[in-house]
Amino acid sequence: MSTQAKARDARAIAHHYDVSNDFYALFLDPLMVYTCAYYREPDGTLEQAQADKLDLVCRKLRLRRDERLLDIGCGWGSLAIWATQHYGVRAHGVTLSRAQADYAAQRITALGLGERCRVEYLDVRDLPTDARYDKIAAVGVIEHVGVPNYPAFFARVHAMLEDGGLYLNHGITHGFYWRPTSQTEFLTRHVFPNGDLAGLTETMIEMERARFEILDVEGLRRHYARTCRQWVARLTARAEDARRIVGERVYRTWLLYLTCSAVAFEISSIGLYQVLMQKHGDRTDGDAPRTREDLYR
Ligand SMILES: C[S@@+](CC[C@H](N)C(=O)[O-])C[C@H]1O[C@@H](n2cnc3c(N)ncnc32)[C@H](O)[C@@H]1O
Image (cartoon, rainbow, N blue to C red; front, side, top):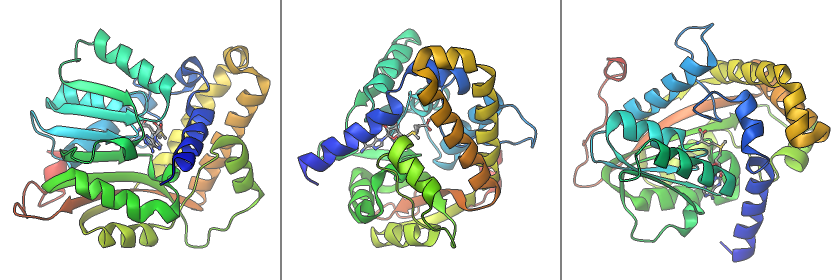
């Protein structure tokens, strides 16, 4: 990957995520989770559903005290912080947004978690080649990777995992009959300059090519439709504050993108899947969950 391509990706991420932390705080939950929530109750609140999502990811990864967790694309630090507080791991988050990294670092210090949790402004591709982790999560990152880069991305994640380690990939896929349209053109031009989606099957082929064993696949499309609807309602309710912080153009652009996303999930034009994988090696069976019941105990 050339330096130019990395610089382009960093600019694309900054375009979206460095808009303003105060703006995102207007419509996200207090933990600042910016991906699909998990509604255990169909009419549940965003706050509860985001906490439940973080916990679901930790349970699927079977996090244990003192394990090293890498959170690729850690956003404002929600998962790294949650996993440190509730599961006692040593968390390392990386994000390509300075605004997110600064926010997360302040929260980690304020919570007194600095010994076990750190977030860095860093491209995941720039982690040292000898970096190793027991568990890895990438929540809402594959959308930025670019389909042609999947082989390199999954190979890198594989190389960073210890034998027997678990990797959870949570990301948007497009539906089988999805086609680029003027709406997707709007999204890539104004909202996600490096956004790129693949189908689930296509993505899983690349995961398998990278020598991961796929243990579990869960579709959360309906959960993302509700998440987007709740973000839209919250943003609309804070319209005046949003206009003051980011101006009319960004406010309307984000409102349109979040609404289009809700509709796209509702009509199944796009989907959301969590795929849990294992790296094989000497510890082949390792920690992998045997049953789904195990996850909900
Ligand atoms: C949709 S946000 C998800 C944030 C967080 N995981 C969450 O659930 O709230 C996508 C994240 O991926 C990060 N990202 C994208 N490409 C990256 C890369 N090459 N290296 C590190 N982080 C990256 C962005 O900076 C952002 O934090």
